[in-house]
Amino acid sequence: MPNEIVWTIVVAAGSGARFGSPKQFAMLGDRRVLDWSVATASAVSAGVIVVLPPDATLGEGQVAGGETRSESVRCGLNAVPPEATIICVHDAARPFATEHLFRETISQVHNGADGAVPAIGVTDTIKQVDAQNVVVNTPDRSSLVAVQTPQVFRAAVLREAHASCPEGTDDATLVELLGKRVVVVAGEALNRKLTAPEDLEWARATARTEV
Image (cartoon, rainbow, N blue to C red; front, side):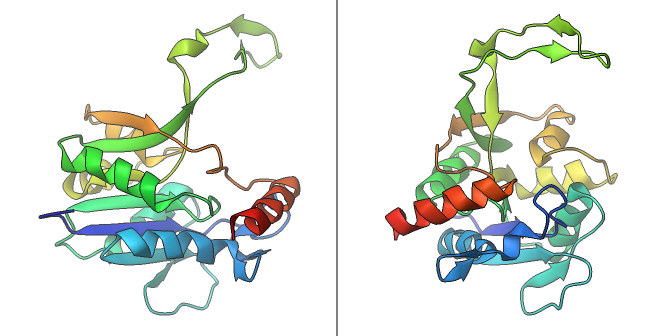
């Protein structure tokens, strides 16, 4: 991207509690899940920072993460050089995000958005329930999307969003709280997050057809 310096933070610091083990280190074909994500990020970035679990042995371009996702992103953010103009944040557990998806999302920030996220439309009816599992609302699904990564931001905006050490389920939420403009691009069906063991089985079957 002309006149832009793009860096990517690949977040791979999770313990894999729901998965049963750190899923980012599971083998997917002849590489780990993490390696798929890093390879794609490297193809579109000037540099990549990989955030690993706090007890991991670190190598070049790797940093230890924190206790939460937001803390881990901040650990990675501290390692991104100040000259970066655009920063992508990508979950290591989404190994099938494509270079095209990265570039489409990056281009939105290059063209003026404060942030951009890939997302796919919600096809199921969504119910909001209370603590007793009683339905309290049925939102209009036409206005709902399921958000993926990479999430891409103007570097100064992402740094500002994390300056007070807030917590959020994703970085776009923190940027939105600043009143900044976050736009959506079309996500990819294969850009599925590996959360449970059956997701890894799906990924291994998919990898065999993709390679």
